[in-house]
Image 1 (cartoon, rainbow, N blue to C red):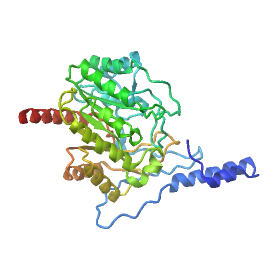
Image 2 (image 1 turned 120 degrees about the vertical axis):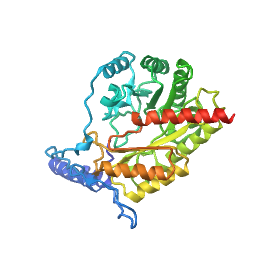
Image 3 (image 1 turned 30 degrees about the vertical axis):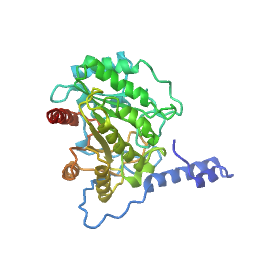
Image 4 (image 1 turned 60 degrees about the vertical axis):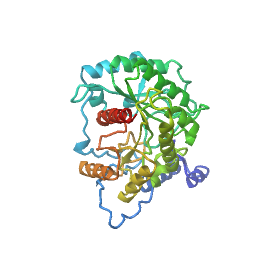
Length: 381
């Protein structure tokens, strides 16, 4: 829910008429959406990678406001095909949640339908479909007290993945601040079930919460046998408070990634079903008002934390209740950020308007990278 500022609370306690109060509240909220964060001036000497400004980004609160059409490069194929229907049927039968549906991912048709290579993939969301956080960009429903965890979910998840015949799977979760361990043990059990059902053949990527910076919980997940530890920083440091829930922050997320890398390197190599030391991964949304220099700084901070993989995608506003889009970044600018990231030493960079942190385009590369890493480790022994 939107936090109402002090001047508005004072206004609501005054003797103004209801109509006057409503009009002033609308004006204040519209001003906050339009002005939100002050954008620093572009830094001299930094090449501009900004996209076209979005006329629809700053929408007035009034319902009569018209929504501007999205650029043509943001068109995604409609969900269809045999693989799509088969995967959807399995998800429904086993009562699983997927981030593909809950977060309204634009790639659901391509990923579930198999795309050009015929391999259907999905990102399974565990620990329920209700999050305890209230990030201003996210479409997943929220509650302070979601339903209890399903103890059968780890086994059901592994069963679904086994039925699909996948060799690479992405598991993500909602935040569960209401639980003593914030769901770390549940995630770890899901990883172990996935590895056991596949006989260790399956490569597992897990997109985790920040666990409010509790490194004990990070270790629980990082040493459970996963191959890729992913956690999304989401945006540049200046915009964190505006974009993410107040319990999340930039330095906390970087600490999660850095320490996850450390824990994976320390684990007994191969004994937990993993392919070796593993990879760390994060994602950033563009189009929220970030500057090019801020993105360069963000990438530098990731490299300092030892992050291996980064993805760039366009922020798309799920509804008018969410933070507005400030700009639509062009495909050419995304391609340039890919080049920049590769030049900074990331092992893999996926960058495009419709790329999401778990987009399957990166999975095939990561699968080969992990197998190559395991082969090198075996040869060294």
